[in-house]
Amino acid sequence: METLGGGSFKASYINWARTVQLLREHAPGWLPELVRTGDGGLLHRAPVGAYLLIRFKHADGTVTTEVPQAIMDTKNNSVPLDKITARDVTDTHRRGVCMAAAFTFGLAYELWAKMPLETGFAGEDKPPQEGAVQSSEVEPPAGYESWKANMTAVSQEGIMRLQDAWKESSNALRDHAVKHDLTWWNGCKEKANAK
Image (tube, rainbow, N blue to C red; front, side, top):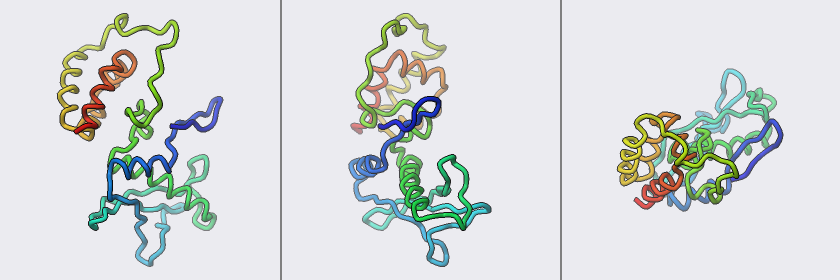
């Protein structure tokens, strides 16, 4: 994981090359593919600007659902069609492949969902900062133990099922898990990734 910017603007991201490497490692045979327009072009017109349609194609010919990625400037504004450059297209393609991998396979979805990164996509867990509240000092939210038991069981069904259950969980439960029960949560993810 890398960080872009500083000060009041700071964003986390995974380099597009790392995303593609993870895709090859965890989804062998799948490659990104741009979907062409009816006239053979790559730019799909929008009311303002254009977008790319990105999908994945397996070596056996199977294709996934197409995912649109708008061509935007550095402030996430649409670029007018007549102002789109080759650089805009290549940047959008790289960004779109990462977004489509998250949408299609759940790969590094945490960045798009603004969640803590799954084990294997982030650096080592950081030790608690001095003065940080330890888990034994914090009361878990209502229903936490029941939710924890359910998530432990769901981890036996694989990473995609665990990710779905995580997304359906309340922010209070998720926050408590990553802030005060990270060893358990990382263990669940490891079990799910092993399936």
